[in-house]
Image (tube, rainbow, N blue to C red; front, side, top):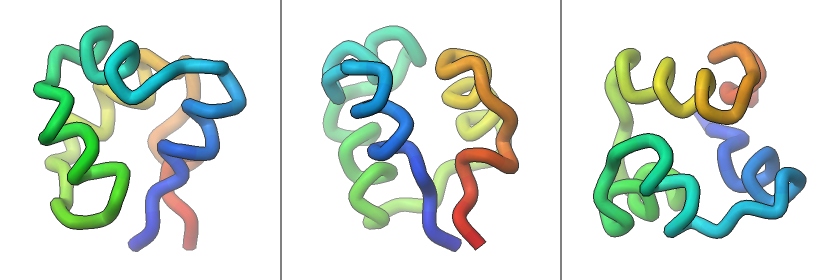
Length: 62
């Protein structure tokens, strides 16, 4: 499963620090999710999607 977080974040002109803060995650943990080093829980994915105002399905690149 590949996530589209970086693509959506960059389209919205948000930095990793800005989005991590809005979502309530540490910057390092957020970076590890975005870089594919860690797999987020469905709750974290849901929070990221809500913050970006998109669906979870839009975050996931099949």
